[in-house]
Length: 363
Image (cartoon, rainbow, N blue to C red; front, side, top):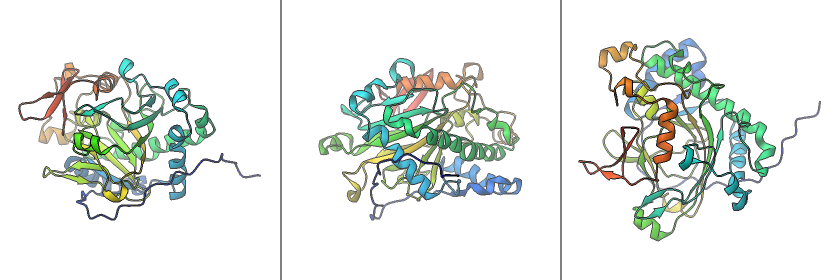
């Protein structure tokens, strides 16, 4: 039989890895292939547990895609930015402010970063089913590959990590998995994101911060590692440290939703995007992301039946009766981020109230 033909795609040439001597975060590397057996999961669970309690960040390797497959997906990820006109992009603009929906484009200069400076970040967001929305013409030939990539992220990365996190709470393996159903209502989604260089004037006004320190809305964020060094994590000692590029790895971090479901046991990771080092400036930063949310109707209350939580106690952000659903939390945060004025808390930190809960920004 003839080989399956895949459509050609323009090559995206990423920046070379920085040669600068930087302060790197010391994050664990998890071989997720070991999670295929009960014995492997038993060994990995305490490592993942400690990573999500200490840093909220870790690397995933041996996830099932080759470097060549990763590179092709990176080339496809640039299509909605480099191969679609500005006019067509506007036709697929997401209804973030109106409906709190990420689906479609988030165009540049949508958010305010600081001192009146607008962002230079462009998103193209796709529902995990891919076919549940319309796409620009240039992306149409690649929809089967996007569908396969979305399923790979969900079943081969997200689900195994959720099982390990449940074991870390001494819960049944499927305690979290049962809250994340591929075919249920919800907005777990695939995202392509491109950062463009900024002017020196904007760098001065924002003190080189491209995206303020924040926690993610979802349960787990998965970033396919790329070479432009800009992601920083707030370490336990209070210092910002860079996250190193490991080729063909996935950087996984915990978000607000996981922190709420785990009763504060797993910490939503505080992270930001900073100006790249000098040898990478002037280059774009193209990232592939997968944002994992529970089903829309899941109420974000702690899994208090966990033996671990019974021993260490539960930290709630609100009373269980007042806890938002996944959808309520996602929509409220999406409508508020970068679009509302922030206030100064008593400790000088920037914050805003979303659905009755305080959301902090670390600048």
